Image (cartoon, rainbow, N blue to C red):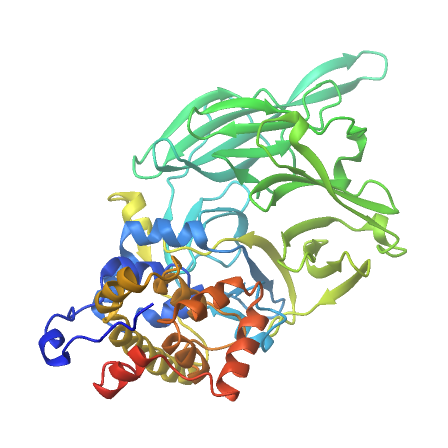
Amino acid sequence: MTKQSIPNNKKKKNSIPKELPSQIILEILSRLPIKTLFLCQLVSKHWLSLISDPHFVNLHLSRSPVSLLLKPFYRNRRSYQLHLVDLQTLHKIHPREAQLKLNPKINFPLLGRQIVNSCNGLLCLCFDDSEIFVCNPILGDYIVLPWTTYDGITYHRTVNALGFSPKTNQYKVIRFFLQRVVQSFDPFTELETYRDEAKAKIYTIGEGLWRNIGSVPYYLTNHSFNSFVKGALHWLNFACDSPDFICCFDFGSEQFRVVPEPPEFGLHKEFHNHIRMGVLQDCLSICDFSSPHRIDIWLMKDYGIKESWSKELVIENGIGKRGHLCSYEPIIILKSGKVLMLVNKDALMLYNPKSGRFKMLNIYGVKSEFYGIAYIPSFVSLKDVAKGERLTRGGVILKRKKWVNSGALALANGMENLIQSLKTQRREITVNHVIGISKVSIGDCVAKLYALSGIDPSDPLIQYGVSLMDIAVNREMLMSIPTDEGIIGWLKAKKEHGGGESSLTALLRSHGLCF
């Protein structure tokens, strides 16, 4: 193989593109955690525009990992705060760096509102029969849906939920009106028996009106509806006279239907207080803790297929003496295999399948009781979704302003240097065609470096790693290391032992085109 000569720099200098292609920037930004993206908005107006673009919003949403959203309950003072916790980095870096305090302005409707459910980064907030709020806590935007009732019936409570139709690309809110109907009357005892019935209305965000969709054919649970997957809202039907167990509402067809339950489930409906439905690893899940000695976690690997139900995890002998008095809701299965659970709606526990033990988890800065849900942060804008409906922008204030300002400056400098380095991609591509190297792109490698957990994107070690990515063997090595800790260790070892930089990077550095 002959050594490829470098063309005359003076002739080629003007051919270097003035700006990094937007597609490469999008690929990099879409892989960054939400906290870093807040800072990226401060780099330039161009980047702010890219992050607000619908294409980027969808790309980032598809890659955004599940986080934990906490709403503290303070007894002696009013709280408008939400805490967003990055679960993947929680145990790798200092706890305060693993979370982001979302502190919307005072007009944000948190006080007295319950988090009903989340969908694509949007939250549905409500309390009993009051107004329904839909908001994006990341952007601080919210809308208030018009209040509605169901004419002709007397209902004792309402249940609400937010969903999304992939077919029509519309967000919708469904409101169930629950009523008790006399089923029978005993003239001797003068006792009445009741059955629960429900009717429903639906609201398409952006259209501005509620529509009747008639009777609900299945019993509604009292538990939360944080089980939206595959365009449908799911819940468990505990009516003893019904053979159907898992029910759902499809937001696309606006129809109710049944989803097959696990085969040989062997579950009695009287244990309805000991079963939770949710979503784990993008699969419909059931957590069964009806036994005082065991917790079973089921996943539906292939949606709608009965045989695809798999008992993913069996937790035994680790619940403790009060285990049968607790409620368990799995939030996420981490990359390490550990399972984060919300216990009794106000405590977090981490289960390690290898040791078979639970560990209580404390969140930095949250010293009160709280409510938590699994949440995927996104930049979905209600301004685009609501299409003219009245929108209130609360704004988001990041705590520790000194850190934010200095961090934004460091990140801006680091990313601008990265752009200068990547401006040489056309020259490198020409070399690649001649000598033949890996198909692993520099863009993917750089994005992976900037998304590493436990290290700041502006850290000199990351900048050093970027300078190595124009060598094919380095890119192959980076992509072959399975863990973030392993990549950081490899970079440290390479730098310590004088791994050096490529001749191309050295040339760029000599011409002021690389940091």
